[in-house]
Length: 51
Image (cartoon, rainbow, N blue to C red; front, side):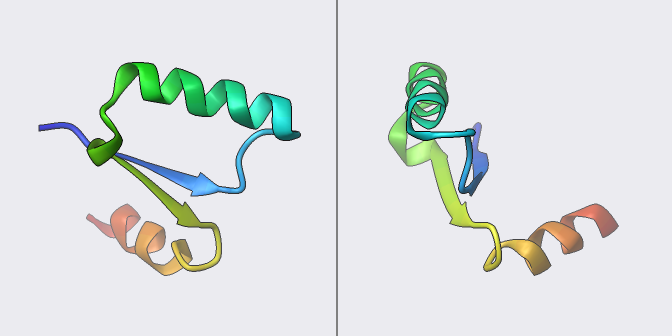
């Protein structure tokens, strides 16, 4: 049972973002990848640090 959360935007530009996305997709199924907006995920990530 694996999940990965990726905070968007990621990469320095479109090319690096595509490379990162392709690499993540090679390691995880799409239903295991959660891409979240950097602002919307801020509180959730801070709460994870408490756990």
